[in-house]
Image (cartoon, helix red, strand yellow):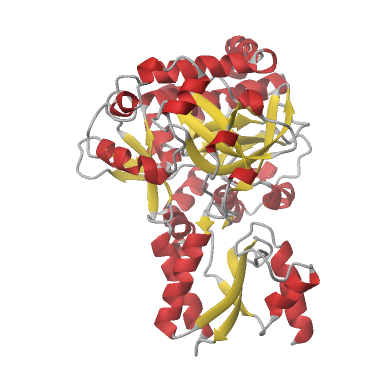
Length: 510
């Protein structure tokens, strides 16, 4: 009996537990809320909000307000300086570095030991449970898993405390037994220089029996492209004939699907979407025939949802009374997700929006962010970054911007991913190329994720600016019957729909 067959026997019991997601979802969530509140009652935050008196969801929402990162930042900073029992019992050693808020280049999400094991690792395990259930003939563990990770660095001067990419935190703390079935080794996986890391991964994995991939589609594609260059082969299955699945998450897979299908042509290749973020692990594609994901309800995550009519243009909640627990959601409606977790995030708005496709079981798709943004390659560029970047570039060059929009340009033959900006100037810079360089550099200073993706032009090259003629954006809005009033030009988008319409009009009239 192979390793995978033995693993399937072990995981079968967990699959039976997962069936409660279909039969008793609200019960699972009630248990999670009581467990979280009970355990955190003695913390600073729990004492301030009388967690010991909370016996129901209504009491929980009365005593705990909805939070953004700004509301929790002071508590998190105390934790980062070594204070214990602040948002969660004990000292929290790890902090996942994520893209910044309106005031900070980066935000630091606590990752407690409980959260590490009862959220993040639980999600990774269940991804395998569902995959093996759906593919009983799999030989997943008869080879190696290629798992990509980031890097970490010291947290202030607190002994033993570190900050870094969530993936690096997961690799650093992973069960040693997992290292027997994964590549590359930990030392290579945690190299901070991605160019060096990519080269070493490609060289060391070239002769390995890789059966599965895990990572962000954009980063993984960069590594696989190097593997193909070194191998001289045409398709990836010629390098790894036993490759069978890619567990992907972090960014939308749709823009990358065609490129992966061209790279991996074997008909039995599987793709499984996961919804994992610095803040937690929330969803899994339990049915390969269904693009929506199952909301994971028995981890240390309690969910609430705010309908989008309660969210303003800045992504802030305007009416807390409209927030509902899981039992209150409706299908087909966009919600901003609010979470409470064993990492000490209490009624925390993570900025993602979802739409439920069913409520028995609770299945959903990710629909975007509460703010306008671009996250095509994991860069998490928000409007505040764009506005501040443009302001700086204008100050440095004497330019003035009237209107703008930006969208990603995806990888294709001869094209490296980058952002394309369409800008209408009221006062043009003398050197448009210099303006683009200043804007790109400033965005890297403002947003650590953008900075990471721009590293040495490996995953993204410098942004491109297309100059819009005077009145272009007004003409476009007028054509859609949206000129005037509260209608606005969409600043940032993951889709190229708007920018391509605008560029087409711009070219026709120039």
